[in-house]
Amino acid sequence: ISENISWYSAWVSDLFISSENNLIYQGSRMKLLQTFPEFVFYSNSNYERNLFWGIIPIIIFILSLKFLKSKLIFSFWIMLIFSLLLSFGPIIHLTEKINLDNAVYNFLNQINPLVSYLRIVSRFAVMIFFFLSLICSLGLTLLTKSLSPRKAKAIYLVLIALLLLEYWNKPWD
Image 1 (cartoon, rainbow, N blue to C red):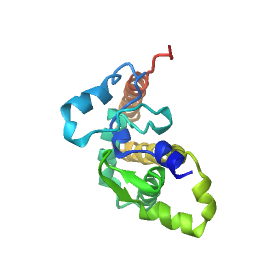
Image 2: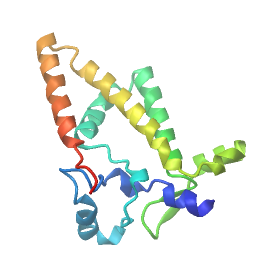
Image 3: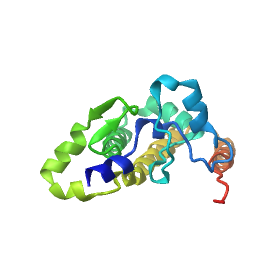
């Protein structure tokens, strides 16, 4: 079971590498391997572990830091970090050679031993994207609050178009 958990657990590099089917970022895995060979990102593709957020959500996410004092956004931040740590499984793979024990996952495993039977822990990525979308949407709402409704609607439409373009994947061969 531990080999399966390690194989299907997310790696830190999965946050920075998009799917190979993405039309914009399709060669990012190889480019990162060539640019940063000392970090030796895990070179095999595993679609279960695709955690790449995209550039637009990262920008909105960073802009939402301004509203971290909001209790609601702060609680979503905590849940995002918790979900992110759980998606790494029992071992946080920084590179193929550098690994860290994941205290959060191991603690949860001690409380509930059934957690060890979660073969695909990277499916916690659903929760990551859920809390990321909540943080981004609330942050964007607070950012556009001072704008006129027409300008805010225009910004939303442009961002939706950019997100659709950014997440566009070609069908599998």
